[in-house]
Image 1 (spheres, rainbow, N blue to C red):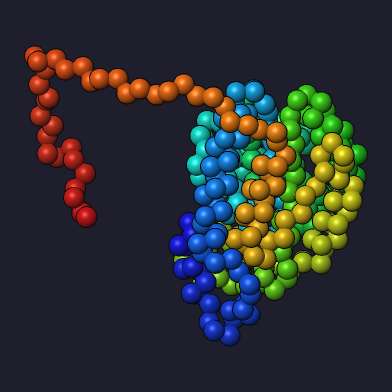
Image 2 (cartoon, rainbow, N blue to C red):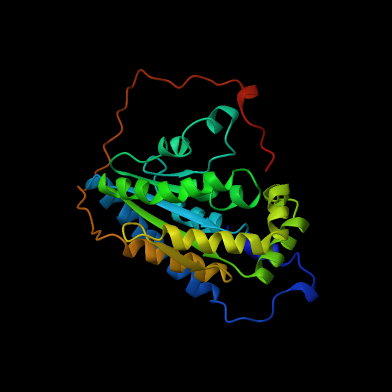
Length: 279
């Protein structure tokens, strides 16, 4: 994944590259990333042992880096404990349901972590800006979501909400890279391109969303996203700080001896069943 970052940067012309910045050097970045990922494993074990329920919401503009940090969080974790919920556009049936209904089904049980790659806050952002809902529905959302989140917290769920902030110039740069990269073009939908045109509308929607849904039980945390590496490290470090986790004692693992049966002989597998040795 880190090699991919460098490959994308090379797609830009000299005239389009960002001016020199004080980016983290590679050795510091990797050292800290691996250290933080080791701590995430400890956090995972603590959550399972203490049967905690965790929801982490990742919101932000397109290309702000949400997916990148989610990948680094999940990279070393057990997918049965930590899973990602990235819901598509609602179906015709889902549009007739209570707005939060399809999100509620993805909430964690005891000993689970759910990372929402975009969430119910779609209503306050993309749906509002693109005209997929009415202003009355948006107002109802703002009335409901604080009460819903308070109920989730009272039920024992730890709810952490991140907004990834990115500058106008940086988003333009990242969209340009995606346009030129055949491996990344699938990330650019017509909706993404339209969101670029409506930058100011998204800004106004974001500001109202943060103002009306920043509650003590589930506050918003802003991640500065222009520097990808720092954003990843800062977000993971902050997430770890939200929990009083500690090492979970483990029993020593002893590899058992393999059982051998002298009368057993391995069956011959036909050559045609093997994957060809292309490499």
